[in-house]
Image 1 (cartoon, rainbow, N blue to C red):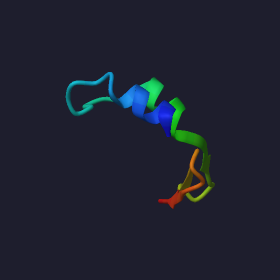
Image 2: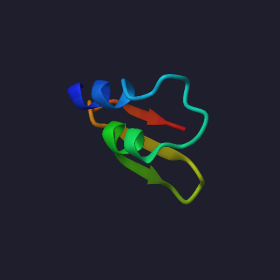
Image 3: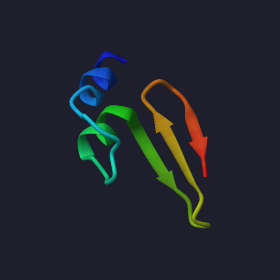
Image 4: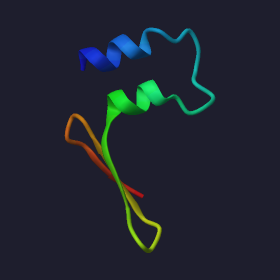
Length: 50
């Protein structure tokens, strides 16, 4: 959590484009399946299926 907050505090406004630093801090893995569905595994253990 400290890493996430440290990175986010560097930004003065809402992000409008992909940021590799934030991706690296937040995401553990991204799994893309053959049918196009995806599972994001965040470093805190949260999974989001799309």
